[in-house]
Length: 286
Ligand SMILES: [Zn+2]
Image (cartoon, rainbow, N blue to C red; front, side):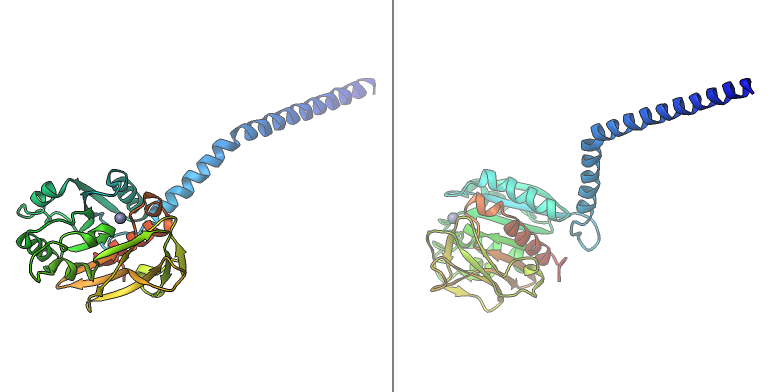
């Protein structure tokens, strides 16, 4: 009996010891989990990030789109904008880039080379070469797109390659889809979405005011163009078309006069819009 009592006491002690051990292990586990929480959170976010990356819009055959950004010229921070645009678009769609940045003469030489556009699905122009006078060069450049090469044309592309071209040569504005002779004062632009059901405008708000702005005046929107948004800097008294798509021969073109400031171009609304425009121009978004 005595022995039995001792035995059961020992058993009790062992049980409580085991319980204490269990408690210690649980406390250690809780502490490790607390310490591990940030790591677990980061892992979770990485997994979510990977999921997001997989949701990037793909070219129809799943391979990356090949894009050439042609940029350079005065009045704009093209060095920073080339990074904002290429990185911002590649975060949103499966696009690989080459970048050409140069002054008017170097750009003309590059865009006059035989087959300069052959390796690319799309050419993105974010340039400002307003003083070009060589009509033959501009006609040949426009022809590349008339024969089917997709184009994305941003901001000062609309003031390039036509102001000083002699005669009635209007190949470049016909490619762009608009003719713009000037711009207004610097002020945020209230952009109104005119085509919420168009694939390019899905995801763009009904109205969006850019952080800063330089609204281009549009004297003519070509009949081949479809206007997707208009902009105003005076509370809606006057509007100018500011986002559109155009068909130029066999080529598709997406255009916007929005841009100029890095602050505007860095906005999600801007980068999403240009990304969808690029996908539409290349036939990957209907
Ligand atoms: Zn500008």
